[in-house]
Image (cartoon, rainbow, N blue to C red):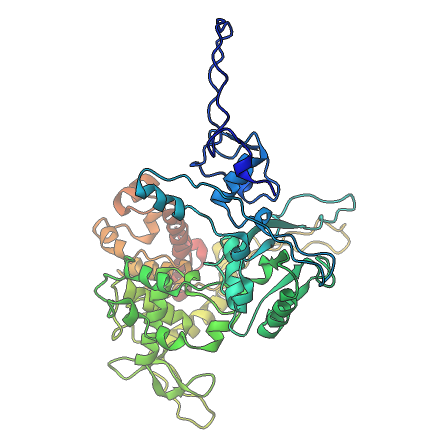
Length: 555
């Protein structure tokens, strides 16, 4: 051991020897005095301070510090890191009977600060000794590499390789539980806020240390508390070894932290929360099932549970309205597919309208848009059909149950008559052809050469539009367009009626004029013009069929 007090016998402690006496000769070189690079008040860098064999130069500080002698290194190390291994006695190697080696600490004069505040700053800046920092744990995160458009010569895609990222930190794992240790090594990669360890088991991770059986290649896999306790017990038998932990991010999806509160709070700030039809202003009241579902074990530990974050605020609000509609409209007369009371809407006349997922979606969307309420459904054709007395009602199930009486309306008779006339139309046309003066067609001879087969003729399909009464053609045409094309132009009926634009002349109106009077996009207007042309042709065919006149008489 080198005593600092004997390092410089003729100079004060902590200083360099005095310079030589000035000479009578002139200093031609003009050598400046050497600065003091061994400033004891400046804290060295961590790399130099925790190095087992510190060097004479510390380049981790600005400006760099130089220590010309070993005494300067010892003095600097004793001031800032008195627990360094160089100050500890060497262990005995000759057996238990060997005399204990006694060491005497070198008396060092600590610099006395001028200001007491400097002493407090010096004590606060002292780092934690290595023996109290815990084990050095190297944490390796394995994650799948991004897909690349590369392939081998055989045409098969190249195998994906996993990326590995390694970081380390000091962790006191002897005093930690399994959950605390998992949270600690997830913090090394900034994953503690994204994933949470399971209460009973998981996520799985591999753990090895210096001198462990199997080494790093045969690292043990830890999933529960017992496996972790056995590993820590074996780790304590070693003298502060380095620990390596490895986990795969692909196996952590089931332990992702769910942010339910952020999704609920985002709903309160959505544009749908201020609608007058929304009966629940606060997020907790808007989702009363959340408090009961938070303690569900399936939601806490399930790996295939949908999260609220996956749905938009509008979809969440629509789903909430569907739940309210199901609670409101419960029909004991009609059962669902599982035998439970089914959902039905009962109007003022007592008619039951069955509610399915499609109608629930339309009704909830109309409530959110402010066009309907929970007590009154939307007035649309898609929901309950035409408002002409033919509402699609629900029929009771069962063979022996009551049956609703057949309505005496002319809806079914008119449809049967239309189909019958459409089937008789070709026959009536052929019967009237000789009277029109056209020469009959001569059949070809049997011995003539086989001619090119003729293309099949297009048969006339049954008209899809109902028989319109005089003056109601425009209204019926708009209803048929809504029914078959799912485009609602009923709000333009008044505009077309004022300009006397009927379906037979709408096809002749220029597109620019139609866009000017309707304000609709060009694509929808083209669809409406083509539909009006087909609708008018089929209406003329039915008119001719009803009057028993051939198509050649029409002008």
